[in-house]
Image 1 (cartoon, rainbow, N blue to C red):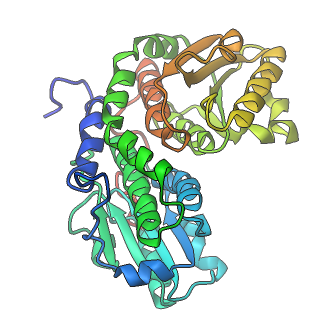
Image 2 (cartoon, rainbow, N blue to C red):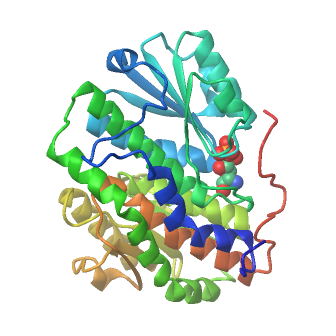
Amino acid sequence: EKGGYDYFMLKEIAEQPKAVADTLLGRIDASGSLRLDEIRIPVSVLREVDKVVIVACGTAFHAGMIAKYAIEHWTRIPCETELASEFRYRDPIMDSRTLVIAISQSGETMDTLMALRHAREQGAKVLAICNTNGSTIPRESDAVLYTHAGPEVAVASTKAFLTQLVACYLVALYLGQVRGTKWGDEIQAVIRELSEIGTQVDEVLETMEPVRELARTLATKNTVLFLGRHVGYPVALEGALKLKELAYMHAEGFAAGELKHGPIALIEDDLPVVVVVPSPRGRSVLHDKIVSNIQEIRARGARTIVIAERGDEAVAPYADHLIEIPPTPTLLQPLVATVPLQVFACELATARGNEVDQPRNLAKSVTVE
Ligand code: M6R
């Protein structure tokens, strides 16, 4: 049932191109517009939404952090992403014009369920993004968009994450479409790129051998840091989470701009630091800033492991290890940038002799608060 792979996690990583294609299936029509009638919240209600709040845990929370950038950019609706376990305890402000998006692979995560119940009590509309048909979270929501990733068995979430991202982009673009905000060439182009993203994920998977080799050489390290900016920041957090849960290593993700506010003190000789670099096209200011961050940490001895767009010559000289990913629009980059981090964590776990599919102390669904 592992389809010839040693672990479910490896199988699920490999299934990602198909999984993202399945999330898109039937949701983009021939003219390139989105068909999301399955979101049974009336368009009139979606047009009136004045705030979006995303609640989720763990990896799904990282998808939600990325969704915030997409929703605010494409729809201009203010959006917050909050850890489901914190949400209801701070007395959040919501009303009937608030759209709450609950993201959950299993649909059974108690923290997320309690957050959505609280939101509905306040009159908010709740849309679930979920992978498990008929599970509790979609049943208790006003609407659901299923990710259709197929069953995810490994405790560490991989294909569910990529498909949650695709579903979030679809929701963001759909809100843009029904509200007419910023609806134009950029959104059309992104829908086109999104419909081909599976091919790019496949390309990344084809080039993972050097990442596996690198991971094996780091098996005796105690700490790995991850840096990113913009949507690369949640990707860095996701890379760190994967490494914690699978390799049981001290791993931390930072927003690269925060380095100088404290974390740079952690840098010491030969400390591996993974840096997710945004495209040199698009938000080039961010690109230049992260290149200087890489120079700063390298000057202090860090071993830089750089994930950058193919052909990014400005960053290459400062990369001790360069992991190239295909060009994508900035907001979609997490779909390709996360894959090497999944492979990296899986290989490190194997090299350290850990149980990949069933890490210690963890359960696939966390059904207690
Ligand atoms: O089923 P859910 O998406 O609600 O689960 C949320 C988290 O428990 C989950 O993503 C967890 O962080 C994973 N083990 C991460 O790989």
